[in-house]
Length: 487
Image (cartoon, rainbow, N blue to C red; front, top):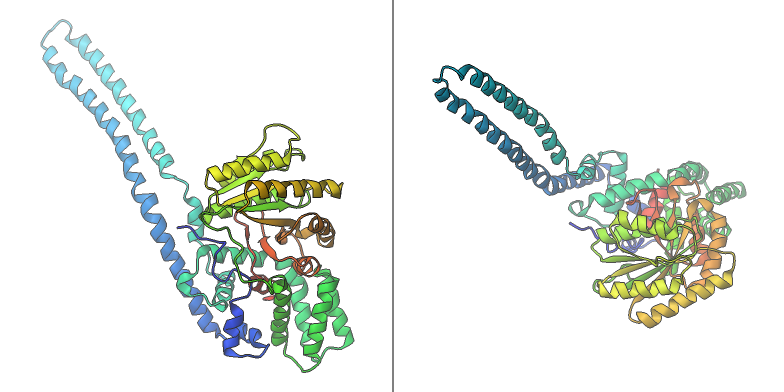
């Protein structure tokens, strides 16, 4: 069964939780109550039901195919030759007694026959011993990665992930193991940032109405998490209006802070019609991948192609970063890992636009639904970069006028504000429509996501929280904020 990550329910930030909360209480503080209203017993029962359902699905999909069909075939193959050998051994011994009647040669013939019989027995026993080994080797088909999935622990991370999905209106029977494992990874990836700011913010906001010292403390915490000056000012002003007006318990203050962060992350999409950022079936979608060399652009392309394949889309990669050493080879390696074909020019320093032309031709011939194009990431000369990207755009407009084109900027979260300065150059050179934020698991500055949205005015489309091929997923502001500020 394919799980379509691009069209996952409630994956488009916090659009679903908001109406659910408005039904309960129309006040702005409705979202805080959403996370605290359900009883812990109800959440635990929900998590247990989801866990049981996932286990049943895994047993249904894996056990019959892996065990029952492959073991019998191996045993049949092994036993068949053994019986043939035993028949060969039996026939000479049965035919031999008739020749024993000749007195002169019977002794020698019998000795020779016994030696042959012993040799054949040794051969037979030698065949029998490696036979189990071949059976074991064949019985080890590699659905072992799935076995790891079955052993998913019912721990605090599972309960928290189920709670986040339940808060978005999901039913226990609809929750998939892919979502649970991703949310656990996301929470672990943001653990450094969360530990740095959450406890201190709780202690500050729990002291009553904010004074100037408390405001300064919160401001310093947000800046340390690389939230950025503009986003920090917005958050502090919103908190002051709320917390200066009334004494707010720490839990409600944290819930109100979550709502502020979600508002910032959803702002770029607020005035656009609600549409999922997903390829369309039977239609060519082209994503231009841009970003500084070293930001994880090639790795991101490999992970996106894997994600597209798993979600049931026909995918193709165009290796148009032709000037960086070994860039094409790296893309080819990721193409092999994800099982996606890579269109590349064998020559060195070839024209990137020519590669894009060939990639579109191949995509149309193969009825591809998602074409990922790797573009140059050098910043030495902004004019050359702009010229190259505009030439690629012209080729796409001429060759595939009906294709849906997006331009995604890959940003390394560990670079923080330095990465943002580089991003500003690309936002001027390319017609960017979104950001892919990578390496969130390796930094205590996960707040850079807020700075990206506030300063660039671009929505975050995907986030990466690990080095594995499964560690990149579509962005949801609700899930991100919960992972960032849930203790």
